[in-house]
Structures are given as structure tokens and as C-alpha cells.
Image 1 (cartoon, helix red, strand yellow):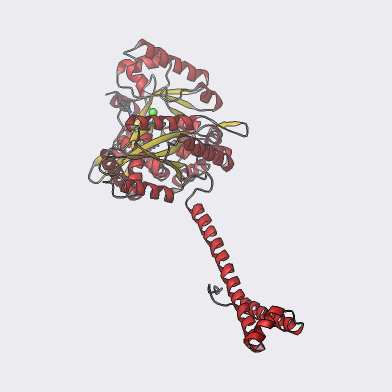
Image 2 (cartoon, protein in one colour; image 1 turned 120 degrees about the vertical axis):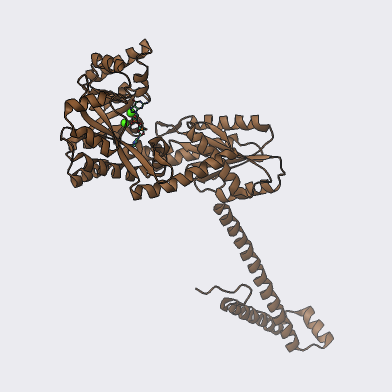
Amino acid sequence: MAEKRRGSWGEGELYDALCLLMIGACCWIIGAQFHAFGTLNHFILAHGLSDQLMLGFFMGLAMIVVSLRKSLKLRLAMRERDATAARAEAVARHDALTGLANRRLFLEAVELSRRATGAEPSSAVLLVDLDRFKPVNDLYGHAAGNAVLCTVAERLDGLLPARGVAARIGGDEFAMLVPLEGGSEALARLAQAVIGSIAAPVLWNGNALRVGATVGIALITGEDVDAEVVLHAADLAMYQGKKDGRGTYRVFKSAMDVELKARAQLESELRAAILNGEIEPFYQPVVSLPEQTLIGVEVLARWRHPTRGLLAPARFISIAEETGLIADLSYRLLRQACIDARDWPAHLQIALNISPQQFQDTWLSERILAILTETGLAPNRLEVEITETALVQDLEAARATLTSLQNLGVRIALDDFGTGYSSLYHLRELKFDKLKIDRSYIDTISMSEERAKLVDAIIKLSASLGLVTTAEGIETNASVDWLATQGCDFGQGYLFGAPMPKSEIDTLVSIDPEVAKSCLAA
Ligand code: C2E
Ligand code: CA
Ligand code: CA
């Protein structure tokens, strides 16, 4: 649509002008006919002016009125346009849901502050990232999520010092720009207050919704290149806080940048490694007690890195979890393990570790079934190991996944028992097949009577719930004898073998079970 040019005469205005001219002329004619302009007549006669000249004068007057009217209308239109533009600008610079400044406005404010700062910092950015927001959103829906975000915004606004700016800069990410008036102690107090206030429950439709917050702090100095750099530094500090255990705050240090760059490098290498098949399954023997015969293996991931050698899972599993690569990694590992296990005697089981994130996937059992079908491994040869973290995020989703896996014939083991929540509630609520006692307990049974009593209690508890028990991390003959006496069903640990590549486990399973037994305990 062609835009009408401002200031030019449109059709409507020409018509208006003609009307006014006609009215002007008519006024003159009527006035003159009825001698309504006594003084004017007198004036015309006295000055010898003609009717035509006066008509021209009146028409000129009408033209002036027309122009005045037009300029008035123009001015009103411009004022309205400016108001609309200001409204649009305000909308574009504020978050629609919470009314706080948005990322753009926040960056502008940080930039202004940076330019006004010398070498010594005079203000700081607090990046506030919500913890456990996603489960609230998933469980109670978007309306509840929005209520949480609005409440968080109000609480941050309430804590904001004078001349500060609070903003929502992402889905569940907020930020504050604050002057550094009370020094680093005041900043620490503010960060604590932010964490504390966000941790308070949000009441919504009779539910107490709970989220937390991790805060990253970056001080603004004139040496920072731009506002994005400041925000990035706060982000690194926040990330460090998350790593150190959420619900905390961290102040940016330059070492964080180095660490993050190394991590980013590892992340991109991991992405390629999964596709290139550099992640391979290692197998750790699991034996029955007291016989100590091989009954299966636990599948443990190893990264055969082209330059860094063989990397343990501690180096890459958490990165795979955080980047969403874990599912792909895990399914490739399972496929390879199934193929390897097809050559072993049919009574040997394989146990696969499944991350909490994967357990939230409603299609998990279908995906596992597809791999079992494709490779031809019987579902009852597979055991899935999960930790309690997989249960706390969404118990009902976990229950559904657990049941559908068990319906296939796959067994479920609760891993690392004793380290996390160790909740009787989880054991009662969900039907597991096996409990794995964490190696930190097994390490110390010979050293501490208290520990030994605890392990004994766990074994008895497990049996009373109808589960079998595996003790992990068995390194000594003394521990294995004691565990067998207490009724522990299975054992795993360096005493029977460390995680080993396919070639080694192939040898172990191919030899006579009695010989293998002596090899395992050697
Ligand atoms: P986990 O599931 O508890 O696995 C047992 C860990 O204990 C293994 O470490 C194993 O090498 C170690 N271990 C076994 N016996 C002994 C022993 O006698 N003494 C000592 N000190 N350690 C022993 P690894 O292979 O480094 O795995 C570490 C963790 O990484 C695993 O703990 C598991 O949580 C995770 N992980 C490994 N592979 C995968 C995977 O494919 N997917 C997922 N999601 N996690 C995995
Ligand atoms: Ca495990
Ligand atoms: Ca374990």
C-alpha cells in the first residue's frame, strides 16, 4: 500500500479547501446583499475598493483558515505518532510478562555504566539463573511457570538498590545491574538475599511452587570491551556456581574463562567423537556371592581420544548430559554392547547406566526395545541402572518409564544407593529389581563398625522389599567374605576385575567357569 506523503495536499484536503472557499464567497455575497457589513461597506466606499477585491480578500482569508487547520491536524498527527513510537519503544525494551527491562535495555544500561567507569569497578552485574524451573513448568504448566517468573521479578525489584536495573534476559534468567556502593560485602549480602528470596515458595492455585537460584557476579570496569563481555563473565561465574552445587553465588575470576574454553573445546570434540564411534563400551565383571562366578557385566563408557588417550566417564558424561548428547551416546553404547553380548553365553547379563535426563524421555522404553530388536538381544538380558536423581524430578514420569521397561522384561537397578537421597519412600513407591550399594560404603566396612552396620541394614532392607543386592567397589577378600555372610547377592569391584575392553572380557567369558572364577579372583 502506498504511504500518503506527509505535508502534501490529499484529495480530502482539496475538497475541504474548495468548500471553505465557497463558504467564504457565499458569506461575502450574502453579507453584501443584505448590507450586513455596515462598517465594512462604509470602509469599502471610503477607500474606493471594489467588490471583486473584497471577494478576493475573503477567499484569501478562507485559504489561511484552511492552511491553519491543516497545520493543526498535522501537528496532532505528529504528536500521536510520537506517543505511539514511545509506546512501541517501551514495549521493545521491556519484558512483556514481568515488565522488567529486557536484555537489550539491560545491555544498554551496562554499556552506559561501563563507559562511565575507570579502572576501578563502580558497579556490578548479578546474573540470576533459576534452578528447578523446568520441572515446575512441566509439572504444573505454563501458567504456573509464568506465576513463578512474575513473583521472582517482583522479589528482585524489591531487592534492587537505588539506581539499579533489574531485567529478565532469558527464559528463566534474570539480571541486576547495581552500583558498588557498599563494596564487595554489600554485594555478597545482596546475592544471598536474592538466593534466599527466590527460594521462598510461590503460592499458586493452592500449590507451593519451589524454585532456587544460582547467581554469577561480574564487576564492571572500564577495561571490559563491551557489555556483552561483562554479561559473559557473569554467566561463567554463574556456571561455576551451578557446578559447585546450585543455590550459591560466585564472583567471576579470569581462570573461569580458561576452564570454559577448554570445556567448549571438549564439547565440540565429544560431539564428533560420538558420531565417529570413539566412545566405546568397557565391561566390568559382576559375580554372584558367595560362589564368585561371573553372572554379567556393567557397561561403562570410555572415550578413546585420538590425542588424549583413554578418557574416563568423569571427563565427559556430565558434558554429554548438559549438552543433550547423552541419549545419542548411550544408545550407541547399548547397540555395541548388545552386539558384543550376543557372542557370550546367554545367561550373562549386561547392565547399562541411564542418566536422569534420559529417564524423563517418555519414549525411552520404545527406543531401548528398538535396539534390542535390531541386535537380537533378549530383553531379560538387559538391566538398566538409574540413580535416585532420576526419580526426584518427576516421580510419576519415572514410574511410567520404569513400568514400561519392566513390561518388556528389562530389569531396573537403583544405583549408588546410600549416596543421594537414600529414600525409603522411593524404594516403597517404585518397584525396583535390584539395589546397588555405593562403593563408598564398601570401601569402609572393614574400617568402621558403624559403616558395616549400615551396609548390613541396607542388605536386610533390600531383601525385605524383595530386591537383590549388589555391592560395588569390592577390593579385598575380607570385604567379599563379610558381604557374602550378610546375604549380599552379587559383587563387583577391582577384586574381580576393573572395567575392560571387549577383547579381554571375550577371553574371560570363553574360558571354563571354574577357571574364570580363579582368574576373576586373581
Ligand atoms: P558407576 O555406575 O557407579 O560405575 C562404577 C564405577 O566404579 C566405575 O567407574 C568403575 O570403574 C568404578 N569401580 C568399579 N570397581 C571399583 C573398585 O573396586 N574400586 C574403585 N575405586 N572403583 C571401582 P567409571 O567407569 O569411571 O564410571 C564412573 C561413573 O560414570 C559410573 O559410575 C556412571 O555413573 C558413569 N557412567 C559410566 N558410563 C556411563 C554411561 O554409559 N552412561 C551414563 N549415564 N553414565 C555412565
Ligand atoms: Ca552404575
Ligand atoms: Ca554405582
